[in-house]
Length: 168
Image 1 (cartoon, one colour):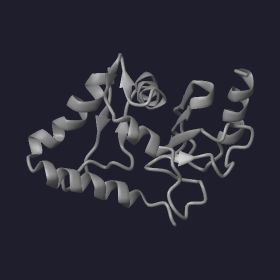
Image 2 (cartoon, rainbow, N blue to C red):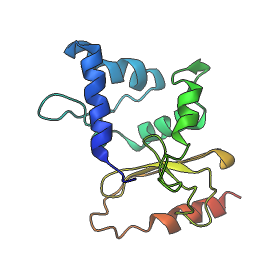
Image 3 (cartoon, rainbow, N blue to C red):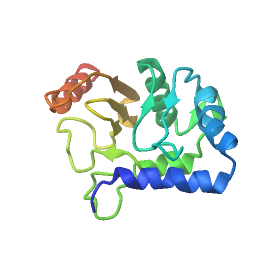
Image 4 (tube, rainbow, N blue to C red):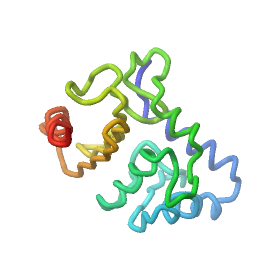
């Protein structure tokens, strides 16, 4: 098993082909997700062919990233409305076969104790150059970190462990 951002991008291409209408495809994330949870700042970039880059390149404010994390924390429910199917939000935290507990459905997991001192049910989006959305169901906690860490100098493990210890 190897992580592959390309897999996520291929899923976006399959979605585009299935929708088969570019204006509907481009409106889909805003109409079906962003607007429904109040993510007003979100921008979802496309590649040169016009396909969403699902592995990355979703720009938003910290507040909007928190909204995304809360949607998953609440099993796809936003203001009493089921936005994402609960079976999908559950599935995201199930380890992919052969990932040794490190990766689920498009989310990084902590089943392999990558983040010592952090509950095993934590799962997260790990973005480019140090952007993170951590979701910890057992603590009813979403943590977002935006910042720039080009060379990996940000210690995400100590950062998250410190937050978890402070909310015990």
